[in-house]
Length: 515
Ligand code: AMP
Image (cartoon, rainbow, N blue to C red; front, side, top):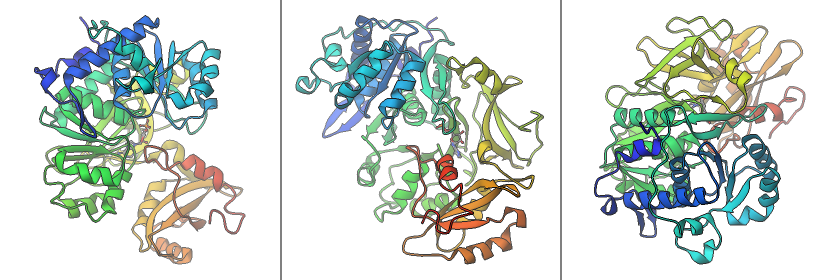
């Protein structure tokens, strides 16, 4: 039986494909589900004509566009694995990914073609540009051009549950980036589960402002919507103005926490503007309780926070009905087993105790591409060890307290940065904070806090330190509090702690670090 991800999603496309809407693209352009069928078929045919065979990889470093989505679907239909790459990667980084993944084809934007052609060809990959659909002057010789002259019909290549549909490289803040191998069943089972728990239907219009080189924008958003036969408002990127303008036409949005803080900073965000919305979802980084509460007060909507990662797609979600508890990521979604274990021994922790989050289920990836030892090291008793630290509260809600590698061990005691960050964030004059451990001759590691002041304010570090002394035990007190203009974040809004640790490694020994 065919278990190809595309076939499983297409089973839910609306019946009257040509008359239905898949996406609103701006400037009056729309895309129907009939277009999805036809254009993805043409891309699949074009890939086959270029020699792509089932099991091959098709890598792409392209700006967000509907053509990029069709390339993804065409690749999956052809039975190959799609490998999207962050548009910020430099040619040196692309060199690493192409050497590691050995794709048959590497697709990039025309502006990068001259630089990247030798990189691709030295790795045995054929370079193609993506091009713009039906814009011959912009697309001569591109993949879109080839697709346009290919047949509009394609019999999707049957695949098994365990065959690869995609490889996504993890951001790899330390060491080599690893390729997470995702199967057709990993992605299809997660999309169907999310559609059901979040109640997506063909009446939904999802505001899509996320990048599509990452699991959140590509799989969580697009696959889930397709499994419901719903519609996308497909924005090229997050812009407050465009999101504010589109909100009255949308029913739902998936975003990273910074989307919500930026919307809150705009006076146009109001109850009236979101009257048509039924669901706001947040993930990829922690949503603070303060943001959750401010959003609820302004709009009447409790943001639904969920937790997932490249390797597993979604693991947990706050409930659609019932309390969406701020500062938590809710419960394991159907089909996912989640436990909290001792990071060293793997022994299961009891309720309320902090440990490493481990998950098991059809959502969990097949392993890291060509890294069998690394893969084996990150599985234990059939569970994938996520590397996130968390606990389960008395009502069963999962709380994330940080990444295991961000845990600070000072004088032999475990310190969870999130606890100190939450205390700092609640102080007057503090917009946000990040707490890191830096090398310390005496204690092994010492706590350093980086604080971003609220607009126009300049809280005194000594005052903040005094306030912390009233709230937290002595061993958790920062050795130094440094005011900074902003925190470094990656494209998904995650604070880059490894970068902070590198920048502030000497913070205990210099006077004005970071200011
Ligand atoms: P990525 O593989 O880039 O999607 O990153 C996955 C990581 O993001 C997880 O392992 C968590 O550390 C973090 N993450 C995702 N969702 C949340 C959330 N709702 N709260 C806190 N951290 C999150």
